[in-house]
Image: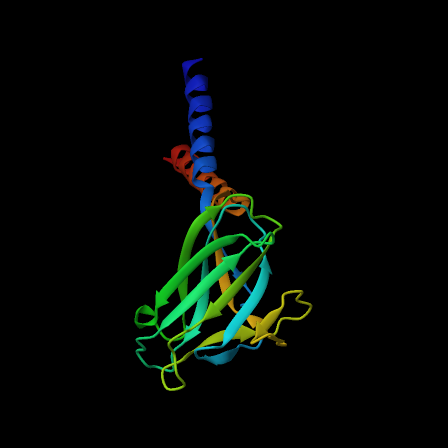
Length: 198
């Protein structure tokens, strides 16, 4: 009887821990797949603006990441980034010192968590108010098929869209739960095998 109770208790603990670890930050890559062709938009200099909308597919949006090209240079200019929700509320407004950016890599910009973000459309506005042609950055883009996202450069719609990522905090991830349970099952079967033949 005690043995059965211990087995049930162990199973409950393992399942509880698996569910707990399944609540993780989830980063979603938008328009960044091997089937698309990556390009750039820019140079992004003062008095010019990049604007793009995207629809969040998870709740608890907490950051966006842009893939930035600096042409191998260390630039001392800044990049201003705004995120506005579909009700024209300012969700995030940050000024990024571009000397901290690594060429051809994603740069993450944190924001206050937007809890009810799933299914809502957000607009990202990017400017570089102190950049000239000799120290300006560019932003990576892709041309995905069937995209409903719109990218504008100085008000003119482009055929491409920004390559970027969005991170959502503490969402339940079914894939993580399945992997954890599978891993636990393999270990359990291995222990039973060893116990049986030793």
